[in-house]
Length: 294
Image (cartoon, helix red, strand yellow):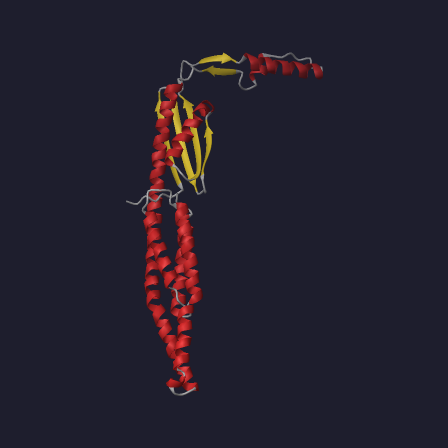
């Protein structure tokens, strides 16, 4: 089962009940850590701690934007009241303006009602328990949709990375064949040169063996190939592990890059150099992809 999850995703849900409707919208993007940013309706601020705790159980890494709005249901029998405190403040303000500029006109009801918030609806006291219940219901559904999207993108990332890993393995198989061949080819080239210069092989046989031994030692990449193969296997195992794999995958790819750089520096065979370039390109692509893995 593929468990890799992308860090980008989107989920939304609206839940309606007698008192109104709760709308939840979640967006996630790449980030080194789990960073939550909440934008809530004023009457939902008391649930912010519950909301963040719920999300952190599902999301371990990424920038998470949370938007939750509560729309009260329309009530035909809704009572209207006068906000007397605002009314008095506006009236005092108009009085001070009138006195300062010596205005003769009186302050009328029309003047006062031109200000917003004088007449407001009188809402029933919210049932916090009921509100929390439907809020978390909407949040859980939005989270489920978000996680599904992250898993879907994660599956696509997994398949892409596996293709690149297989390409690396093919190049490694070729390099394992080319490494002993480059030593033999070097020996034959050197033998031909010495033969042209000296003549009889008996006269330069010891020198030839010494030079070939030095060359073989300098271009020995067996340890690097072994470690690179181990990194590739570790990469595949990590992709299937049920942990936060993004940072681990990036670290493994970085270590693999170091090994392939050493192989390229030690080898003189153009065929090996070609495969090294291909492996480097695939590792770089893998590192780019895993930046979006949770």
